[in-house]
Length: 180
Image (cartoon, rainbow, N blue to C red; front, side, top):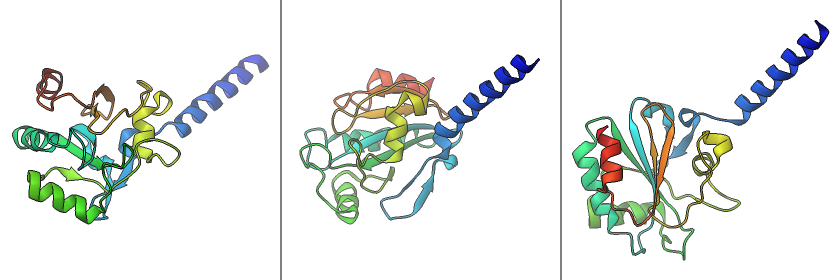
């Protein structure tokens, strides 16, 4: 009996330790590009595409297709969160205000842009810590390789997959995920 109690006690301790170290997607939050706190719990029931962006990158024209994707599917429980980041060759040097203006004027962006963050390194934002760590997301470890890498999150808050930076936002991979 004593052995059974010890097993139960230590087993429960492991479960508690895991649950305290592992957050749900819906526990995350970040600041919008306007500096307002945005709770990911407001995204329940939506498919979410998260993308790290930059305004001086060869992939920057993807803003246009990301916006078109949002216009086509945004009314169908689909959300895009753009996270400007200056981690790759200093291709996003602007302030939040400059980035917002750039996106609006050049690409008519209406999907949710977030405050500029770091997507790798010692100052990696908690959202990207969750996206890139199997220990946190329960699915896979990954590394952000370049600007416009995309992460797909299910309507249940589960990481589904990573889509490489060069992939067209209208690729079959992304469209099939949205539509199914």
